[in-house]
Image 1 (cartoon, rainbow, N blue to C red):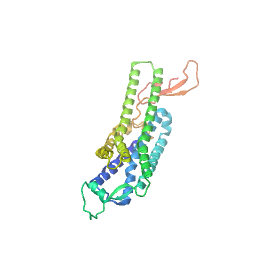
Image 2: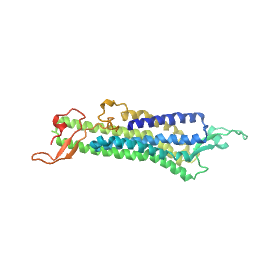
Image 3: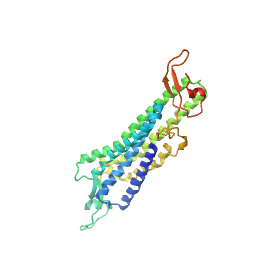
Image 4: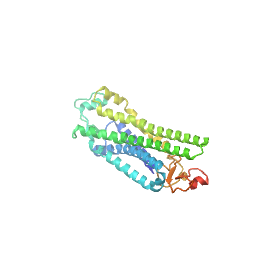
Length: 320
């Protein structure tokens, strides 16, 4: 379910940021009126917030699945449903201010000459508009703080959650693999499987985090330069020259399906709660230790290993 929501966010990015914005660039001026300008500003920001929120929700879901697998089997569907609702609500709340801080702005004669890089007759009377921040009616600090809020809530906040979750997953897996080594016979097969699990998790983590950072960074840097660069400065000129790099963010909509296993066969899923644990995102063997009553000559814990592969009868029934 979370992967499906991420795919919806990708489609929204392709439609709104790709097609609608491309038409705006092609027509050069905003021709769709003030209402559509505000709608576009909101709809353009919404999928970016939703995208980041869902990626963070997937990281949280994976942490819950790895850290507490038995609880995830019981409560996974409820957790995923709440995660989706919270992601959408947060995205709508964070994107809503864009509809109030932007409006259609009638270009002045000098601004029009600057945009077309030419000279117009003095009596030129045609009116042209752009969908820009409403600097005439709103205080400057409102526009600036809204931009900083957009940058933080669409990138840095979710990135912090992602890093914390995957770091915690790494620590949990390390502890679980240490526990497995203690209860195993120390064979080379167990050691090789442990090393493979570590390598697989490290590769997946690096791929997910780097893809998120590298595809989002140009968009965020250009957005910040828009705030700090003064009109006509070298900084503003540099920003205009690298503005095309924002298109890199669209490339991530093609990469993420491979990272989050959108095409996993449903028959291979072990449960039906819709969490990322079902989609094959969590490949490591999870070991759960539960306290039991001690009997003479027995261990203090009951070890349960979810049957992701064929195991002996003693393993599946629990060795005491």
